[in-house]
Amino acid sequence: MNSTKRSTRPRFVFLAVAVCLAVFAAACADDEAELRDVDLALSTTSGFGYGYWIALDQGFYADEGLNVTLQGTGGSSDVAQILAANNAAAGMGVPGAMLPAIEAGAGLYPFFTYAYGEVFDVVVPAGSPIGNIAGLAGLTIGISELAGGEVPLVRALLVEAGLNPDSDVEIIEVGADAPSVKAALDNDRIQAYSSAKSDIASMNATGLETVSITPASLDTLPAEGLLATEDTRNDDDLLIGLGRATAKGQLLAYVSQDAAVCILKEHIPEEFTDEQAGREGLAAVIEITTAPQPAGDYVFGFLDAAGWNTYVNIFIQGGVLSQQIDMGQYVIDDLLDEINDFDQQEIIDLANSLPTDC
Image 1 (cartoon, one colour):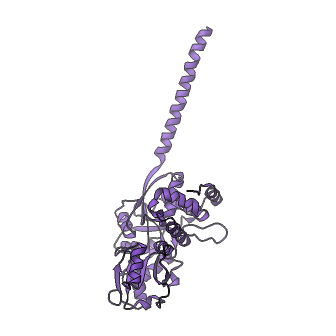
Image 2 (cartoon, rainbow, N blue to C red):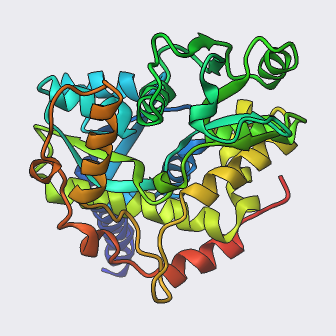
Image 3 (cartoon, one colour):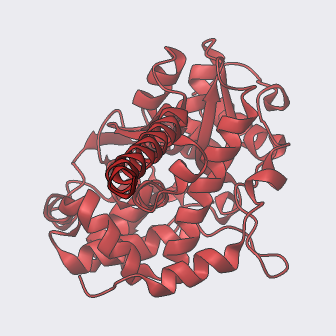
């Protein structure tokens, strides 16, 4: 009898363990299956998208039940086309590209502001006598590329200053690398330059000395953020999850830029080939993507129809839009409380615990 008991009990234990393991594996499989596949289109592959890369790296999207794939593109115009075709659940872009798409019939719905204040800049060499946009009359403006997101803004600013973009100035493509831009300025091929603020900051870190002539009135506008599509605009769980996870990614970088650099080096190493330039660019980006902090905690994602309508008016003046658009019909501003419903101190503690010696 005793020998029978000894021989059967191990088999029972083995069977119980096997059942437990099978149940555990099934639970894990269910957990993985619960993650929703989401394509998120980015308007850049540069460090400007730091919040998205950090959110992906640290599992913040997964915490929201999302298996996010980040799609880097050539710019906001590309993102607008992707969203209009419903080839991504949401995307990051600037008003200068998104508003023309909306005017053309695309259903694009802003729901989270990522950058506060205009992300593009118009600069002149340090010491230049040009002090404002009107001073560009008869001169040549260099831009990163003819399809770049800065073009609609430059044209609008010129019209606002009383200049015709097609006859009073010349706009040419000179690229976005510091040596090319510096040579164009030094040789007087161009007298001003426009590109993303982060790109210009990186160039200045390598010796290009410029000053901005962009009107200060643009500093408080919702310059770049996330937009939903016609298919996803009513999907509150998705939009809240994307916004909240991205906000956490941003906060982590606010707290520790060194930790952010280590994360970004893993995902976009090409941005840190020149370490100093990469760090300077990230610092400049964080400056314009820091959320308002009215009473202690940051308030991430703030947007309203008024800010977007200001852009509508700017671009109508610039000939980028032909008619008024009531952005109150498009802006989604009732999810911000839930997007900000997370423990900011927990992210701060996490940021301070991450490695910085990369």
